[in-house]
Amino acid sequence: MIDNDTAALGEIPAVRTTTGTLTQQWYLVGVLTVIYVLNYIDRGALNLIVNPLKEDLHITDVQVSLLIGLSFAALYSVLCIPAGYLSDVMSRKVLLGSAICFWSCAATVCGFAGNYAQLFAGRVGLGVGEAVLPPTAYSLLRDGVRPQHRARAFSCYHLGTGVGTALGALIGGSLFALGVAGAFAGMPILSGLRPWQLVIAVPGLCGIVISYLVFTLREPPRPMAAGDSASFGEMFRYVADNRRLYAPLFLSIVFGPMAVSAWGAWQAAAIGRIWGLAVPEIGHTTGLLALCALPFDALIIGFLMDRVSRGGTRRDRTIFLAIGIAALQLVPALMILYAPSIPLMWASYGASMLLTNANGVAGTLSLAQVTPGRLMGKVTSFYFLIANLLGLALGPTVTALVAEWFFTGKLAIVGAMTWCYPLLTGLNLLCLAIFASRLKHWQAAAAS
Image 1 (cartoon, rainbow, N blue to C red):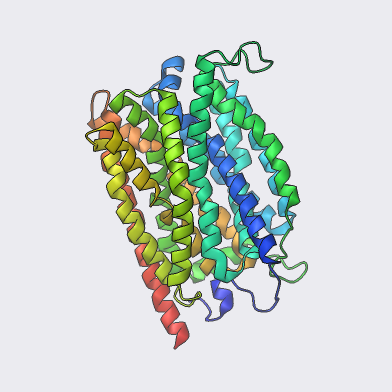
Image 2: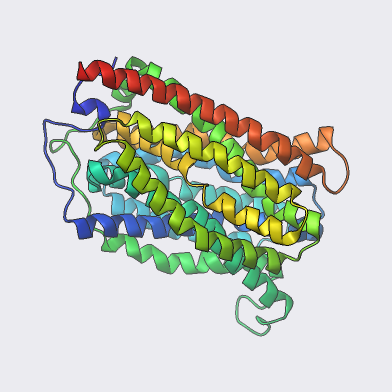
């Protein structure tokens, strides 16, 4: 059982530290959110250009799925472990700033790839660099944000997922259109790139400049005595001692990322195949709709989660609220695939964006609620090892294989998405419900 004290929920009472002023706290959240946006622009660039990429390189949907999932997630998953260790023992600013430079260079290399093998290798390098972000950012948020503001902070941070995807679609659509129009002809470095290559290379070059933002942050103090560093052995013992809470939480991050990665990987391609829309139109419309909806989504969901938790005394309620919102999101999401007209399809897309943030916030907030600060980097690294190796890597390929085995024709991927997304999301929400129920009973026992 978890000890009934504040340390069980991520607070170390023996050493009091300060998170800094509110300005410093929210500047930290803002910078990390911008970096997370950049992260998703780089990693999600392929999602928009699936159809032209497939035609140009003469590859199958299954090969595309391996580019989107396995190539990125293989080393990304494993290297989260040493990244988690480093985030607990060295300067998190230096670690993260260096990683951003590396993954931005890898993204640029992807843009210059001329065949499948080169693109696959570049995606592997992208995963290596981005492996540093999750444990480092979570550790910074855990130590730099006051407990009563954490739901809003994690909600704002997870806004990067949707905003990064939206900006990637918007910017990518524009770059593709400019490439088709020959706008980069005669320009050094970029003039010889195909339109789909520009979508990948240009954001990578911009990321090298954005990495400077990390070094403007105030490094928050760690909630531990000087020189006190938890070992991996201690982390394993802690998780094992509290396995009734961690087991359903870790299971949820298999099914949740699998559902999200599969849906995100094939959504633009499905819209293009259903309605015959061009890449720029899909990119511009999805990007604009998401950018309009997601800020409201993050702010409202984060506020409601903090509100229903009653100042942190009923943290299980934040999870139950997220479960309800995520279940509701399935309705407009599936309508994207089966709307009878293009306007209704886009309306469904916008509605799904208004409800899309709760699921991710629930998992990461839960992790912060039950993990002591001195273990946060290491536990987060294993959290993402599971999420990415079994979720991110497999999601796109599972959907592609279901389409290949059980459906036929141009819209086979649409049929596979219809079955895979609700099933995987349902399993994720079931695991989160079990976790929240156990957290509720623990809170009741601790209060008595």
